[in-house]
Length: 266
Image (cartoon, rainbow, N blue to C red):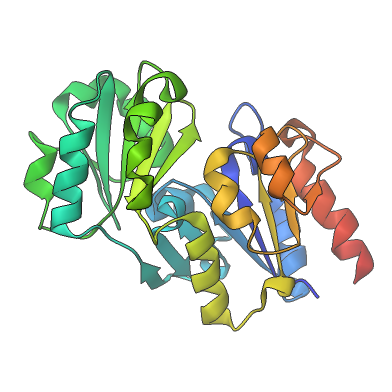
């Protein structure tokens, strides 16, 4: 029996205009009555996700920063951070890539530099508490950093990913879509976040259901046979997923699949 449903946001739960389904609140209430926890999984920070999912946030779990931070009903249950040495090394490599604007993602605050001020509106779509600092390197050693998010103005697949992919043996390097390249500690991806939450809740992989669509979802799609790639998803994600939805994200594919595959069978 499914006891936890985890879903990516962009391209999956959100439609192409970045909107949540109109009937999401009713679905979360319905799932809660059946003892099923609804879990957004995103590169967004916790504060942003909490606000986005009000008034239901206090009864939900969140996997934030692409798995780097895991929250359960307001409690921080896990985070994975760079060591100071690792973060210094990663920043040196990123500084060598043209067209990049980087952000350091702490557990609560996201830091960016003045030259990225023109992307402030974009940053606020993903992060609630953003702070401009003169040099990102000044943050190293002051607090845990769970992810380096990079806006690539030249295109991730064409520019930053080929230049950073050789770090994949030491770090998680992911094309996060919409010109975002994310670099995280090796044990800080979405799949790790799913496992940590399942450990906290004493759930087996057969008791969870996962939805995703893009390359940064790959680490979590192989966690359970109950993984669903969106009809509009990337072909590489479809290949490793247990199932493919009948509907796209613009057709409310996540909630319609939950209704058909979970709620109609209880």
